[in-house]
Length: 111
Length: 112
Picture 1 (cartoon, each protein chain N blue to C red):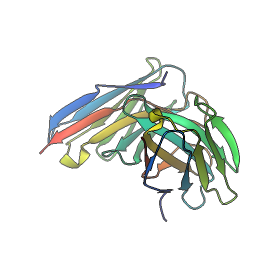
Picture 2 (picture 1 turned 90 degrees about the vertical axis):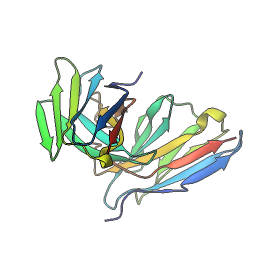
Picture 3 (picture 1 turned 120 degrees about the horizontal axis):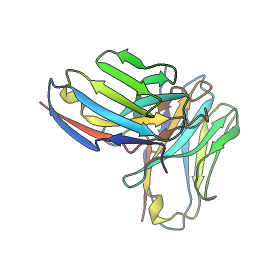
Picture 4 (picture 1 turned 60 degrees about the vertical axis):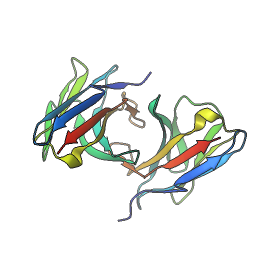
């Protein structure tokens, strides 16, 4: 089964609100990454957080990692309509050379 | 720097046929990974190549194969196509390890 699972599966918010999505995984990891995918296109790398880090920021993105709970969260602040996309977490399950993607959270930001 | 390119972008085949998809990584990237994306199964790892060697393989039948050339370009082949092979096939490249992968736009394969 897949290593990462996102929650919720779908999220709809108003422009300007914050969006939070969560990822849970099953085994120990070296790092966890978040990706965005627009409408069936390729994925875009958003942020990487290593297993020894607890929080990371990049622009309007904030990622947390709790290795004891095997979970991560992605917060998008002050959302925009252009943030509408599917968001995936990916974990390496200590393999280093392959990643397991979750099923994704579909985010809709209503203008 | 040019991004990851995949050809063709769309493909329609019939059951039993075979197909070859191509991926050109970002210049200088030596690792190429392939993924299959379907609505039901999500993104699933197929295999990863580095310096012409397959380093990792996902849980797919032997009908799925790949290779990497000396210029890091990669191809994947699916033989004896089945309806369930209809999917978006994504290629991703990275410098050495797969810390940060850069994805191509994908090849949409439809099997009739």
